[in-house]
Image (cartoon, rainbow, N blue to C red; front, top):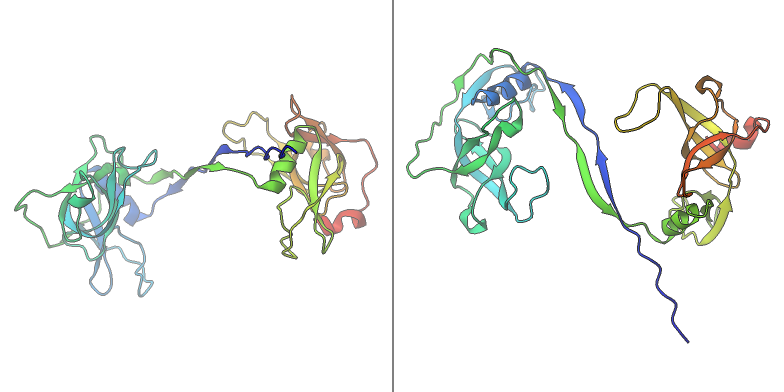
Length: 321
């Protein structure tokens, strides 16, 4: 008797990226503009402590604070961790140490990278200095990294008051948020993905509450039991609720406005997400009966279009909103 072949292990690279633009208040504006000019600024709290990076509200009293001071470009490592495998877009492409550095004149520590030949060259208490980036634009990356300070390099332990005023101040930044990872679905979602390749939507039923989950999760989040009974649902379904999208997303070739909806496929115990097409956006409504339009090759529904059936009665889908 020949043993059955193990199921194919699916794996795919995924990227979650959400860069956004944020404005800066007077303290953060001064801090980042100062980095562009090769100056490190902190802020003095009500109890006289100097915080670097600066904050706009006192962490003890919650009062607004604006007393800026200039601190040194040298400092002391308070703690560290070695990064032997740098990821893309980290400060250095070669192995380095993440360090907390208390700059001379500051009472708090700044997190950044330390360029060192190996973990044996890093120690709590070691003296380091800022290595400035060759081109500076007004961001934390204007500090390229820290590097070991030279022998006998003098420390400036005093913070000097600073107006925070610079020409052409930085007033806003684009904050990059990105996560790259490899995703491998489990048993339930593998069956779901295999079904999509045959233009079928496969869910799983909870043996306790009998709700059919689409996409399946492998376990019922309500009852906490495994879902092993596979159920084909749809293909048609009902729009339970929806939104009109008026902002065009980057790299998405869909003209605005368009409609994105929750769709309860026939036989499913909850609604899934899908785009509505084949109908003017202002004619989409709750209760609209829709069916999938599959992508070329049938890998997944590109969008859902009206079936031409009468709208579903509200009582039929109200528990699925």
